[in-house]
Length: 326
Image (cartoon, rainbow, N blue to C red; front, side, top):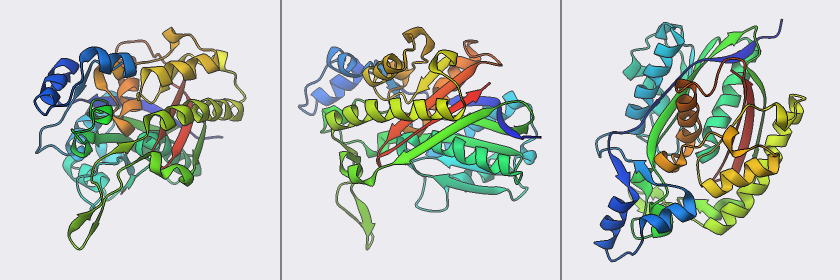
């Protein structure tokens, strides 16, 4: 009998500090950089974002989201046999954020734990990876988390990027099931586009060589994102032998409302079947899809038995989609 990887619990967490566009515009004005609530919102659909305090790391946000997912699943945390954390902003170069999460959750069963780095596609990559572990029969209960503190890598002299990103974490618990769960997934990357979205700095001899801040060519990212998201969504649908009209909910990476709406239009999905949280969360990279998923599950929009299509695109250049039944 086929063993599916099925989501049995979701959770999310946002840092308490909510920064509105107006507040951010005032902060930038003090530095001589001009922007406004209207300028930010009209270009991105973002009205606010949440930023973590300086002493709060990705692992701290991840633990909060994970605790809520574990509670929703009603599972003993010692039954978790794999932890995967998707993040581009780990607490340390090593140990992995996943190992820190294991320790902070008090999971003492010596389960495997590792990080996965695919930037804004990270959660879809991690979900697909967890699916393979469960389908192989090697693991039964996998905790998958997307967690980011992107506020740490923003250049506040660049108004085109510093207004877009937020911090947060989302988590799901996947468990082996005879009922359909993850139906299909697809992942891709094209390293020839590394320069359009990256943090080009690195550490050498204890010093940062290059820039430690996020760099993005917004127009290039927009053009590529709309194209690849449509293709990978159709690839995931075809793999499951389903059509777009069978999708109950689309959860795209919450990067920019115009990219999100463009993808939905290409798939022929009405706006009311797309989960959008970008207005309140901003772009939280690997955390954006699980944050949106948890919100829609908890407010009752997403219900058991419904088909959900997730898709993400990020630096690398990476992109992926996952189709699942709740």
